[in-house]
Length: 546
Image 1 (tube, helix red, strand yellow):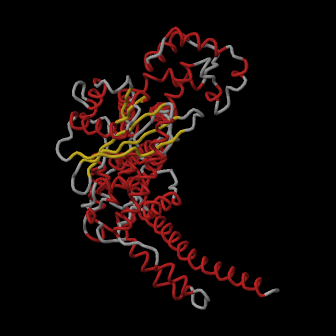
Image 2: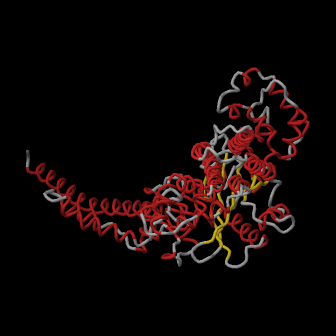
Image 3: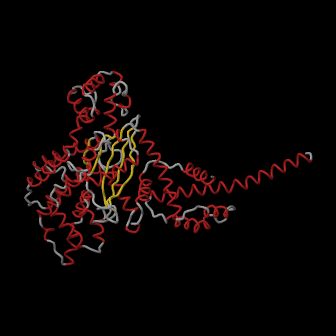
């Protein structure tokens, strides 16, 4: 190789090495920033304090020396860990940025959806401040569904209908929510929400920004309120008093071990939505009756109820029937439950309760294993079935009263589920659709008849994506109706479950967290969206370069 060529080659290698020396630190900084974003994201998702980032970094550095002992690049690894910024202020900024990115994705979906519904519920935080969570359920052109936390707002003073509406209206205005696509609003049924003239829903309907929408109370709240008609107070009070007298012992821990996830037995008595968790306690109490009697006998603390056959039969009945209510509660919980799913479950359990009531009337105990066991233990006990038949009957009547909201759209939901039913009452169905969704009745009637005779669609009636196949041009009213019903929530379960995240994030130790930071943390803890970390880092670099 000639001298000039060698010189050029050396210059090339020198330049390339210098370039690599410049690129490597820049790449390390980018990777460290991405790592910082990802760790901050996890901190928010797990409802951890913002100071947790410093703890995570300390754990990294403390363990890295041992983990990477003998590695040739140990120093580089330690330097990489050291370069990840996780101070409290940095974590806060990262969470703000990530929440902003997720919010952008959400608002883009809101603008693209064809219909949406809202669910709103209230709770109090660690400082007794009223917190309102608003979830949105969106339906898209392809009938896909997304459920997300739209946001939250707080009321520092009174929680009247006017105060709630004022804060909510400001909130949706700030979100630039396309209210003309709103289909329904689900609430917890509190008076401030449902008051005829000054309730939150009434004020929404009176305001020009809001379209015609229908509303109903949350199914879970309805079920709890209906099932509370069951007379459990005497049995529950005595059972809890006895259980609490077994203090400081492993027996008590076993009694309460299955009550609540948090192990807070007191919550069973004072929290309505957790009311049905009492079943677990009642069943465990009954299973441990012999051990409880033995323990109380040893301590000289006799409880006459534990030898009262009538009281023990009441306990057995409640353990059985609250088990049915608890099973129903589990079925109607969860994300992505449509109003049709919920209505089907409620109707199914109402029929089951009617069957069980008839069985009890005939002294048949197939659905009451605890009663059957009780009668086996006390063969001379005179079982009065009318007492328990009356209890179930009262619960059924309460269900009828409280679930009447859903009767308004039952005809519509059934039709959308079975559009090719042999005998269709076209007039009745069209009236229900036009009344609930403000559609032209004659046009709806024509579309129902046209659809009924569409051979192509009839052949695909069993497909899960059936309504996706229905042409918007040919069936504009039925398509719009189907989209609207698909957007409806069946419960405020999302709100209820989100409040547990709220209590973790804004605990008594973190009661000073701002509403903005609380909302950011909740959004990341509850969202289904994936943050675009690369985009966030690129935006930071672009801002720094200016």
